[in-house]
Image (cartoon, rainbow, N blue to C red; front, side, top):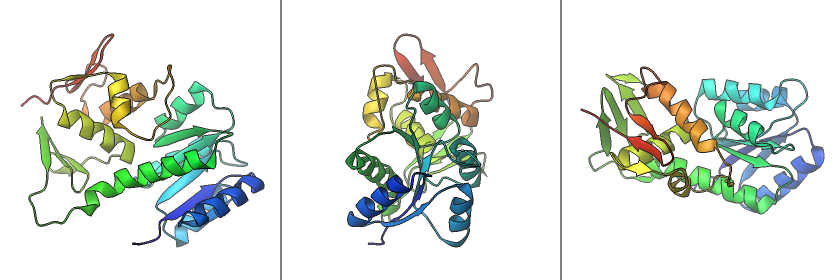
Length: 234
């Protein structure tokens, strides 16, 4: 099995050293850099399977860097922040991070998040291509569960790993109200708290991709006081 490549972007030299030693001992190939310049230089020359990105960085901050990464593709991002406030988590998820962890944290928790995110991303690619692809149609959309591609009338609609995971839950549970807690239970590995609004943020992001009018959604409907209802239509 190929060794997974982890890129850590954090200006705390002590944390960089700790994570590099700890994650390397877990079997990963780890590179650690101090800022966005180092991140972009590394990614220009090397592949990465996941990026651990600090929110507060010298020069260009983590939010701006996350936007750039997300505009370039679906490379998984776990965002770190010393502040740990709900607003930081929500903004981080808004710009495309797949998960969020507040400092200080136990390295074992970060490891669990990394494994969960990589496992979700690899799930589709582990299938042998001798069987018919699993596909779901709704409206003008076609979601291929094996290739993790979403197409609208033949045109690719880019999805982040988090958006794909959320949409896959909805299409596999059509015409059924799903509570926020239920969705969180299906999205294993994410940080949660009694006031965690990250599901709402992820739904908002997904609606922008699939709804003609996100303020009046046809597919992902809000059921006030209960959760969300996915209506695939024709």
